[in-house]
Image 1 (cartoon, rainbow, N blue to C red):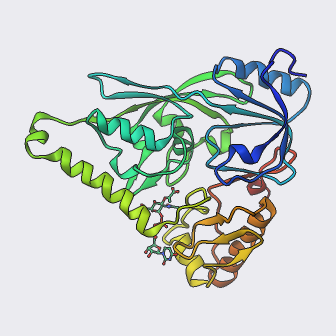
Image 2: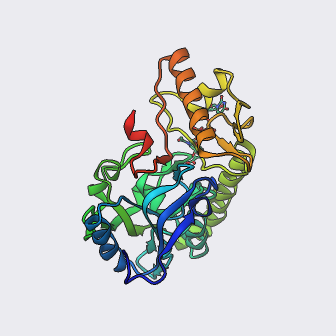
Image 3: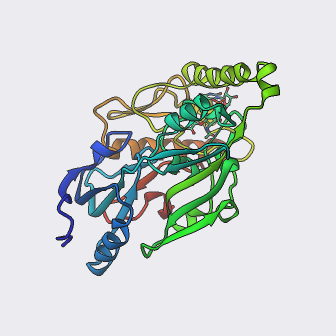
Length: 308
Ligand code: EPU
C-alpha cells in the first residue's frame, strides 16, 4: 500500500505530532508539503478501506494511546504571503497563529492584535473560529481552499463557513482547510499621526500579558472545552472544585479551570478520564453539558466527541 510515496512511515508515534505529546503509533504516516499529493493518498486509503485523519499543527487533535489503525496525513506546508497594497494575507493552514499575527503587525496590517499568543495554526483557528478579547478570526476571512471528503479541492468564500462562536460549518462537513486568504486593515497616515500603531501594539502586548497572567504554560491545547452559552467552562470547573484534580499524569490547571495539562507522564486515557470527570461533575452540579474544543481520535478513526 502507498508504494508511490517513498516518504511514508509506518508505526510513527503520534505523540510527536500533537501539542499534548500524547498518542500511540499510526499504522501509516506521511508529511505532505505538496497538497496535490493529498487526493492520491485519500483515494488509496479509501480503496483499501482504511481510515485517514488529516492534521496540521496538531493543537486541536489528541490521538488514542493505541494510535490509529489507519493513515495520518500531516500537512506541513507553511507559506505566508502578503499581497502588498491589498491588505491581503494568503496563508497555508499550517502557519502558526503566532507567526501570522506577528508578521501582519510588522507590515502594519491591523485587526489581529487581540489574537496574539493564541496557540495553534491558522487552519485550526479558522476551523474553530478562534476568538480572544472579542475578536474572532472568521471575521477576517475572505476565501479558502478546502479539501473535501473525496480528496477534491474546492474554493469557498467566507459565507460558506457559517461562523458562530467557536464554530464553523466544517465541524459537520468534515472538510479540511488547506489555504486561506484573509483581508486585514492597513494603518492610515492619519492613524500614524495619532500614534494608533502604538495603541495597537499595546493591545497585542496586553493580549499576551493576559495569557501570562490567566493561563498556564506547559503541555496543553488552550481551552479544553467551549464556553457554554451564557457561562464559562473555566468558571464552572473552578466552582465545581475541580482545579488541581489529577488522574495519572493529566491534571486541571490551578491557574485556569479550562486548561487540561499533561505533566509529561500522562496518557490519552488519563486525559479522557479527566475529561469525563469534568463533564459528569459539571452536568451533575449545574445541569450543563460541556463540549470539547479538542478532537479525540479513536484507533478506528472515529472521534470520541461524536459518540456522545
Ligand atoms: N474563571 C473562573 N475560574 C477559572 C477560570 C475562569 O472563575 O478557573 C472566570 C473568570 O474570572 C472570568 C470567566 O471565568 O470571569 C472567563 O474566564 P477568562 O477571562 O479566562 O476567559 P475564558 O472564557 O475562559 C476565553 C477563550 C480563550 C481566550 C480568553 C481571552 C474560550 C473557550 N476561551 O477564555 O481562548 O484566550 O477568552 O479572550 O472561549 C483558546 O482559544 O485556546 C483560548 C485560551
